[in-house]
Each structure stands twice: as C-alpha cells, then as structure tokens.
Image 1 (spheres, rainbow, N blue to C red):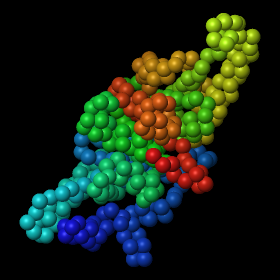
Image 2 (image 1 turned 90 degrees about the horizontal axis):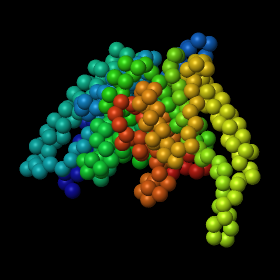
Image 3 (image 1 turned 135 degrees about the vertical axis):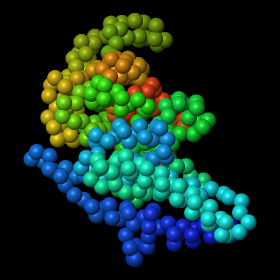
Image 4 (image 1 turned 90 degrees about the vertical axis):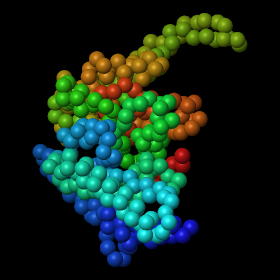
Amino acid sequence: MFYDTVLRGFFFFFFQAEDGIRDAQESRGLGDVYKRQVSTQSTGNKATHNMKFVIAYDGSDCAKEAIRYVLPFLPGHDVIVWVGFKPGSTLCTSQEEYENGIMRRHAECMEMANEGLAMVDDTAASALPFIGIVESGRSIGQELVQAADDRLNADCIVLGTRGQGEIKSKVYGSVAQSVLFEGSSVPALIVHPGASATREVCGHSVLFAVDGSERSLDAVERGGKFVTEGCGVYVYHAHTKPDRFVLVGDFGDVLLENSNYEQQCEDLENLQMKLALECRDRVSTAAHVEVPEDDFHFVASSSNYPLTGIGNLLAEKSVDMVVVGSRGETGMSRIWNGSLAHDLLHQAEGFALLVTHQVATPAEGKKDH
C-alpha cells in the first residue's frame, strides 16, 4: 500500500510531461496538443486531413518490420511512437531504491521510443514519443487501444506480429490479438513478417474482403486511404450460391428443382455489380485517386471458407495488404459465428492486415466486450 501511494505520486509529478497526463487547468497533454493540430494538405484539387499514426514499438524485429512497412504511407502525416511501460512489482528495502528502479525502467522506455523515432523522423511530418503506463491488471494491448481511442485522437494503430499462430499466441501472449479483441474504433494495421519484402518485390496491392454489409463497406472506405496511384485493388466477395435443387417435404426427403434458381442467380449477379461499383467509388473517394479499371479486380467466390479463397489470392496476386471489417465479437460468440479477422491474424507471413471495427453511433455508445 505504501509503495502504491508513492508510485502514483511519483508518476504524477515526474512522468506527466512524457505521457500527456497533465492538469487541464495548468497545461496541455500530448493528446490535447494533437487534437488542436488539425491541418490539411493539398492533393490535386482536393484537401485531405493529416492522418495520425500511433506505432507500437518495443525494439523487436516485428516492431521494426511494422515501421518499414508503414514508412511509404507516412509522408505528410503525424506519427507517435508508443512504448508500453509496466512498472510491475519490485521488492525494495526503501522508497529511494523503488523510485530509482522506476526511473531506470522509464529511461529504458524513452531510449526505446527514440530508437523508433529515428526510423520515422525523416519521413513523417511530425514525430513524438509517448510512454504509456500500463496499470496493474491491464494488458499492453488494452492500454494501447485506450490511448489511441481516448487520448491521442489517432487515425491508425500500427503494430507488428510475430506470426506465431493461435496456440502460441494464447500461451505466450500477443499484443496484436489483444488489440484485435479490444474492438477499437481506430483501425489497426497489423504487419506480418515479410510484408515489406512482398511489397518491394511485387508492388503495392490491397485486397478488400466484403460481404455487402455496411460494416464491410465502411472498412473499404477507411482502408481506401492506403491505396496509392498505380496500386492493384482486389475486392473479394464471399457469397452463398443459389441451390438448383431444394429439399422439401415433412422430413426433407423430397428433392425438387428450384423454380426460382435462374432469378436468384440473376439477382446475385446484379448485387455483385452494384457492390463492385460501390467499392470502387468508395476506394477512389478515400484515396483521392481514380482507380483505373485495369487496376480494379472484383473476385466472387461461393466457397464456404473465405479464408481459403483469400489465402489463394494472397499467393497468386502477391497482395501485401488485406482490409477486413470486424464485428468485434469475443469468446463463444466469436467461436460460434467465426471471425475472418481473427483467422487472418494467424495466417501465413508476407502481408499486413488492416482491421476496422464498426464505429458505434452516439446513441449506441461503445460496445461492451
């Protein structure tokens, strides 16, 4: 109890400048500063707001890979290099020893943040460090999402993943998986190992996984900001194919030809044409570049396993970014309904995964997980 009181007082007076935790009457935190820095840049005859990228950095190879991948998207935009700081519990014989230990670990975090800044400083419009204090009982992913959502006014969270698979992620822990399950209103760009190499060798291509819902179309619009001129755009639509024959009868034992089969096929084709036009229009609007017909590809699949179809496209077309909308379900609900975003997180290497969660309306509030 004594050391908890000391720790809180020590953080309040010593670390408030670095963390943006300040008294609102006296000064502005980093989050408040950024909220006031709304600027525009000219793109042709259109104006776009600067994006703010929050890059989670811990000095690991996967964190460095995430920065290498996102570098081409940073010119003209703002960057915050976020480092999680967990004070932890330390056996100390005196208050002085305890404070010295906290200062030493905080200095290590600042050194780590500066290392990340050195990788982006010459590219971004502005770059600042941010040390996020992870409270007891919370994960680094939870603190990262809360900071990006509530305090930093971020437009995109960027982090790397080791690509260690679902089982190892549960055993050893995974910040990427934690961020995915938190259901942030801020899109999360999760970079798999080898994503930057894929783009360098094969060029930049983006695949949007859609199902026709407003959630997936919102993901197309938000992910369209990562489409650049000359970029290949693929829209993958997984659908249920109409049945030519149907089972009827009290026991479902009578097989009859579906009299509406032709009409259902025609309706599906019309729906897909409208969906393709809608996606192309949303991508062009978000990217502020017209996507040529030669660079736009609509891929329809009746497979019951969209992960398989997307995996084939990743291999065949050398796509380096996949954009998918998520319902933000967890626990039994996710297991029962399935989650393409979760499955893609544990897919093979060589691409970046941009996950967007549908933003709740003010009346709905933030979804409970």
